[in-house]
Length: 76
Image (cartoon, rainbow, N blue to C red):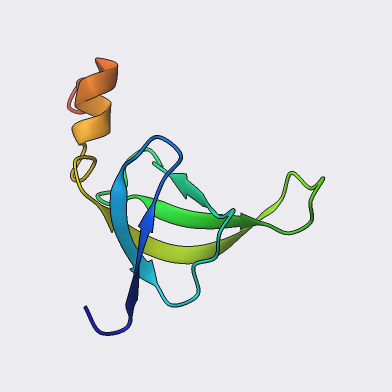
């Protein structure tokens, strides 16, 4: 897709993210989010992150990971 890059995660998931994605970025599922997000550590030892953007990852969209973890989004 134009304006997106293909990537794979360490667990083997395939995804599409913005052109700003770099190796070492983190894919995060934020509670209440409909899509995964890309975050980047500000420094190697830092616990603060920069928001890069959302992404598409085949198999973990629209709350599917919450379903896998045993959460009921209407209840939890």
